[in-house]
Image 1: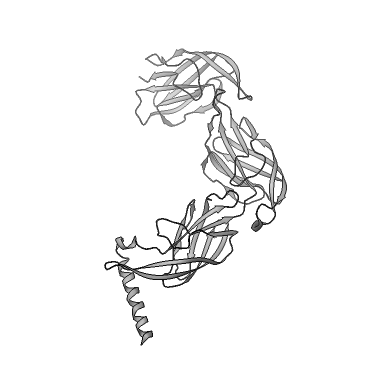
Image 2 (image 1 turned 90 degrees about the horizontal axis):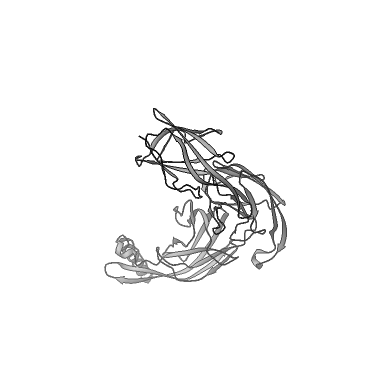
Length: 400
């Protein structure tokens, strides 16, 4: 008789729980989620982790599919059980964990019926590098964390950045976004950062060699080939991680269209800090022409050519401004601007001097820039007669 009464109570509780939690106001009362926060042992800070999916025993649902997470992930627990197994399918590998807990129903209100209080959360099995239970009471779907999951340091992640310098000694410049076809390493069959626009990249150096070739294929800058040379030093920073090989004494030999390459930090850290930077010097020969009266969508340009080069600019483009390179070898540059149905010629004269910026950028500076001749009906208006970088409007042109 007592056994039958217990079954009846359990069924009523289950029915009330299932019906009440269909009400959104009642769902807020649920504290039956376990929260996980991924962290790094190296600095104890939150880690960004690529998650392919998390599954739990008793359900075929997959949580957090194909997403990068940089904060807590929360997984629902089975309130009718006292343990649950989870599988974490991460980019770094597959991991498992078994949770034990106590589940007790509490009647919160007549409308919502019972809520379940899950306490005593404990990890009885796992194969992560290290874990720490920070809160043994289950949380809601919206807030809270229970378990910190730590990983050992990654000792071979190399970071490279692209950087644009300015034509002054005050500014350190800005990050330069490169439009990549992709990046390849000589020891792996993968393409990193395919069709990506990035100002930095992180790739793993070969842990079985003291040299790795990094080939960067950029739509902006062409191919950059970098031979990264380094040494290993064994160290045991954490008992759980044992002895690890840490990379130091990084050197680089590069063939690149960038102006110069510099080693910023010759050892690997976790999280990665910039090891090598590819610098682009300021381009101080760019004259900017503003097309006055052009619609916001721009004017159709068939092409622009210059007398000193075979390069074609703005081919089949819509634009309301033209940024064109002056000839650094001559005191005059002639441009031909081909619009739809007609062509205009314009020539510029200027004075040239040289100056070195940032110790390595020997640049030609242009001053007293003026229009020598023009086919435009309305004479171009001078707005600035010196070339600057980043560019400013030098001339306004009315296309009439």
